[in-house]
Length: 124
Image 1 (cartoon, rainbow, N blue to C red):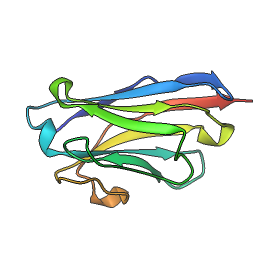
Image 2 (cartoon, helix red, strand yellow):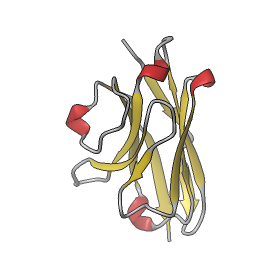
Image 3 (cartoon, rainbow, N blue to C red):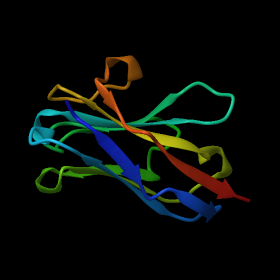
């Protein structure tokens, strides 16, 4: 069992930056690939970024490529999402997720565990 807790969300102006963190419980964090997803009001949940178990492989949605960066620190059981150049369309609840696999996935249904989410609001 893995429990995930996100933090770092908030209100930021267009063009600003935020860094989200997701701390995982348990001693097997390194066996999980991790992902970030988001859901805006009235919209489907969408994939944002994913990272392999070692951190050596990452993959991004086209909408965030070049602006967001996913990373992880296995010693701290933590995955991060650095968000730069934020736009109003980035406003959403952001969720981290874990899948017991070497490499990450872009399909939410393939993930085993989810956090409760953290709100990100970008004001224009």
